[in-house]
Length: 327
Length: 278
Image (cartoon, rainbow over all chains, first blue to last red; front, top):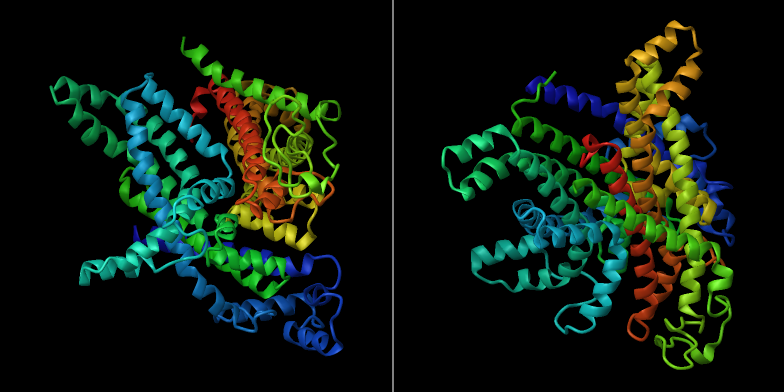
């Protein structure tokens, strides 16, 4: 097992190098002069010279890459053109909001999706099944940012205590406060703000989980050992939940993990709609302002986190499923 | 009975897509008003439905243009971008996946690592970054969507070709001295057609959502081209006064994506029950 983990970590190295090259090329593939593009038409010669020095655009391209990658390895992702602050600082300050949003979305999606999928599987070919499949189908067909717009229009505008934009207190801090001091105010404040963005992002995921739980449970319930369990005279509840669901949830765990990773970087448009101060919105704003150091650093960070989350999912899958061989 | 239930999904999907194609092909004749005609006196007009003498059934936008007409016109861009992007990713993905699986060894490893690389960046983020690099616009949006969709096509094709490669009829073709190209494209790929079509159909839905997202951020088709994503972006500015500006273009997207998802699901069940729910 240990060897397997080491090997997987080593395999990450070429992937990370590849990602860094792709991200580096983002600026260099752009047609025209990248500095002029960043500064706009009204660039002064001083600004131009300053940026050329900062980026070392006068150097050969491989030298530029090595310099940038070397700095990135030391945590130096450059300086934002518009905001003047180090890119790493800007990204780190936005990450908690992004992680919080992804976390709440996942929790919401699992809490709704798994029971709905189980219900559909147990009540197969009944109106309950039909209804949950319709919900699942609609869920994957609705763009998350449109759900966001609809929630803003028809919920936030009509319910006074639900805010439309921004982020309240931190959910994690709020939860800690609740269990240590019995003060739920920060948690309430955080939940008020995170609720609608989380529903917007979580809807598609809930739909995926519902379908997967249903099909996985149906498949397991058709197995021989389930028939054995029934033949033993176990109650249906024990059969479904203890023998069936425990095994059926394995693929669901994998999908939840992968989706969590995807949500971190994939929620960019929804973050924009709700003015959620996350890393995705930072990147989108940077793109609109042609602030390329942020775009490079942000995409690099997101890809790294995404890759690491996926690796963790793979590893935990290996732990959860003893039948997987580690070679 | 089972097959009928399964086919029903494909049938409904086909009907939805058929309606959509009809509207986009004959858009010029079907629009109730000129979709480009501005009239600021009736801007942000609420839907009038089919009342006596109503002119703007689904209301008007910020410039007083007919929302329904713009939705009908906009279907062209969604379908066009979706089809071109999916088609390109299909051709490239199938080519890469098939070559990798057929040749094997280093070529295969190289191609698949490249695909892993694309997959290691969240796809919407990568699409946004690509369009940001190339500059906003419809063609660049197509390129970006095609690139992020290639790995899935390549992976499915590869796994199918790996399965078919060892079949007897392929071996027979080799024994008869057919060229590699003939074996690969005529014998192997023809037998991988069904699952690839399923992935492509489901991919249409995804491509249309990504296109809407890019247009929503102002990175897709530029005005005066009408796109649903852009309509949503305009509507976002007016959700208090004119919610119909976001509701109906969004419903059009859901309708379209739902059609492709239903068709894809149905095809999957008909062609290959094994492929169900990866």
